[in-house]
Amino acid sequence: MSVYKLAEKIISEGLEQAGQAGYEEQALARALMTEVLNIYKRERSLADIAHELNFLADNLDEDTDYAFMRP
Image (cartoon, rainbow, N blue to C red; front, top):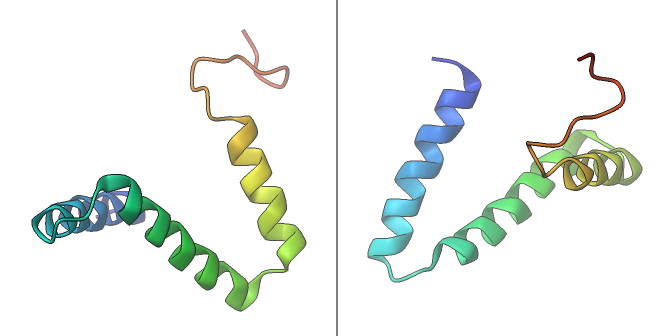
């Protein structure tokens, strides 16, 4: 199983458990993001984390073509 499939499975199970406990998806997502950042901070600089988060934010639209992509 790939690490991405593992993450997908963990999220799916977490969403089910959170729903059963009365938590909304967005609340779980916010809590998970906080935990991801805590893991990142163990080995990465704040500038490196900020750079990655900015890159992800800048690329949220999956349908956008980027200059570095070839037609």
